[in-house]
Length: 302
Image 1 (cartoon, rainbow, N blue to C red):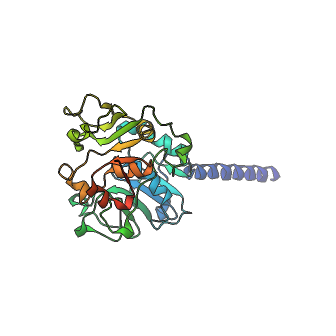
Image 2 (spheres, rainbow, N blue to C red):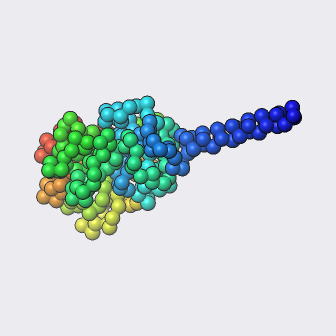
């Protein structure tokens, strides 16, 4: 009888150890698996959820500024975003390295959680039929007055100022923990054109060609035929390469005008503004742009 009791106790202890291991494995903050949160479905956690492959660069601003957006900083952070294909091999490792407190999910957990920060959505026809969940915050890339909601925060300078977030924490910028690994500035100086190539006025950009510096265009899309042969194109860079090129630059050339990109003057953020602010770079833009984006406190190139 005594032996049977001892065996039973040993088996019970083994069960407890195995059960504890399984539970803690599920909740391991370094796990890349979707976390099962049971019937409470995310109670006591913050999910940062991406519904689009674009705008990977605003993630750090959301993590760091989550309290400003109304979330308890003590909440454990879950993160899901399907990055653009060109970022697949570098985006998640970057976040793991510099934000080890964030649990990165490799499968979409859905958004049926109590605390959700949605990044980023376009405030237009595509989402007007979506239900707005109380307690969730939605980061909007552009502003549309007719569909504004108190749960919407804007990275665009055209929304309500009290619900505007400037996304200026980018890889290797001063506010990022990755700043310690920033690249040196290029010599000769480099001026950058960044973004989708088709959204830039290349005839305007050609006017900035100079022997005093190199112009490097980074982004994606078909190469523009009208661009000067002096401009170097670096297409489809990965997440690390892309931001290191900007961090090493001396300035930005927007290639943006009201005639060519009216939406950047009325509703929608151009990431050139957040890049210029994050990396403390002079930027080639017109006076109207400077006035509209004054909340970004940019420096206009002379």
